[in-house]
Length: 393
Image (cartoon, rainbow, N blue to C red):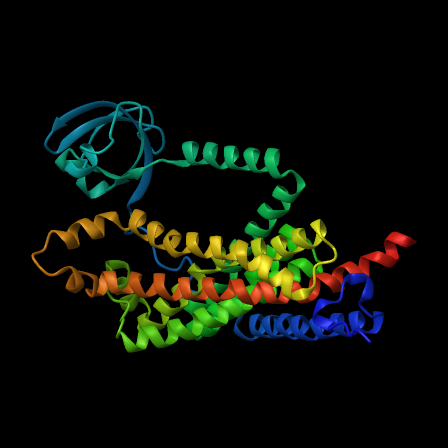
């Protein structure tokens, strides 16, 4: 008598009770994760007044006005002349002080700029000082282009993905930032906030299904690995989170906030996007392999998915590193200018933080691929078995 191993059964051979048990087990894992996320949100949700918006942007009496550059003079103390678009002097052309590094890197006639108006300086003749550029229009056009391209290519799925992105950003603005400001544990905030962001992103963008739940489980596995390694890495490498001026300002504003914990929180959240990308890809790869050949057993599905996954691993090895090099190029240039060994340069605080961030996130990404592939290979047959009765009906 020939015995067929359960791992190599096809969907048609999968017993209905086994498929039912698999779905129950899946729900028994996902539902507690969702409940834990909801409990965490309720427990740490900031109540009453929060420090958000509590710090004045400018001193009393000062104001931020908008103007258009009409002439670049280069005269010290009044490097440009600009026409006021807001404020009591609207329509007037006034001299404006602009820092030399700003003047040399992109200040042209027609630019819209924001000015700091100091009434007490009216007697000196230069009460308007450059504050920043007005960027609402160009960034608004880019956002509109982004939305149009996503909708044209991905259609309703693209709209759902943007809705998931909006919901995730709402979690950051309404929960993560206020919770950190009010003294909630940064690691707990990162885990709960990241979990909520993943539920929104995955289910809104891809719908509620066994396939998307597979990707979600893979994401949680990668998140757990990333969190554990980040927790160990920041402590073992003595990363303090104090290497930037912004961090030091935060420490002065919120004395109870541990910058090392804030760094850990940032590492966990930063890896979520790429982590979700690889898990969704792996789940989809296994489902497509199964659709192409429904006779493939669990072992063959896992092996085929991992062949795709290894290519994904090869790309993720350098994706995060390239992303850091691009965003931190000024820091790298400054660090490279010092006369010290290459290894010593990498071990400097401002670079070591990013090295640890990149390595930790990469390990989480790489390990999430085989985990997601294994879950997908086990659950794709359950998904198919569930769909077959409906198709026959």
